Image (cartoon, rainbow, N blue to C red; front, top):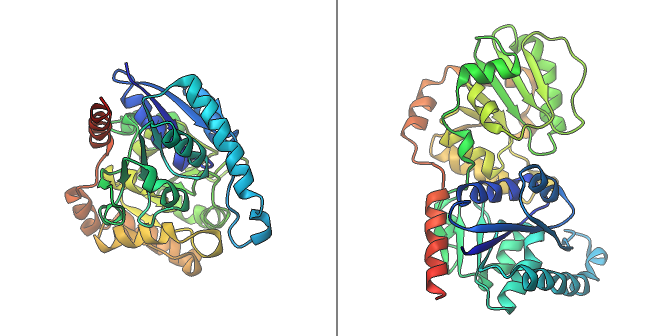
Length: 348
């Protein structure tokens, strides 16, 4: 059985898609994961994935002096990744972006091991731009992104099989929700302080008519007795969260956005932007909005009364629901797996 080494980390957005592919290929390939002592290590442990720890260096944007030692640290981390590769001897390295994938990708290229990477966003991240020329193929979540790479292939986004076809009644019972429509709120892996605070301010009004299931991020729960308002820090089984949803308020990270649209859940995206972001979420939101597949509220326009109005309209937006029903956005696993197999066959 061929073995694939998956890598990428620093945020759940780089890790969960890899876990989705590992789960989908367990009867086809052997697999392991290389990453840093960060969220990828924890998620791999929770999902029983063989993990190899490797240091990686991250470019600090806008801080020249912080990056002076970067080439030396990168050289050391590539050497460390090489030791792992020599031990594991994978047949292919699959990267999911982020600084954690750079050392394994460089070390694999040096050893003649084929490298594939996947770019989640409309605008490619720095790590994927850096390793793209060393890759056999660059998979993308968005059609236009593939055109920016010489070896780009539009595949769609990897998604876990367990987010589809879940039982709504069972999910409601799991979270203690009643039969009213439910708004799910997703602020990203660490939660969004801005979204969290605004949702909690409007919850007493919203929960007169709807439930709110709020995934607020680690350490961000607060004491409350609002009927119909449920908060959780994190949920490994997001299929249960999605199954409850009649609508969603969310950041616009690519993985979550693609999942919501593939599941036909009407979404109001509040993309992360400005100095905290390279603008990838805003571009993702603009793309989906141009296709009529979501609604968008910019953070600078985020006011309580406006958010309330947007949520009520979202629940009753039949045009948006029709557009979602016709959408071709779907799970990219099958196409990605097919291309991986073709790459391995070409190595014979």
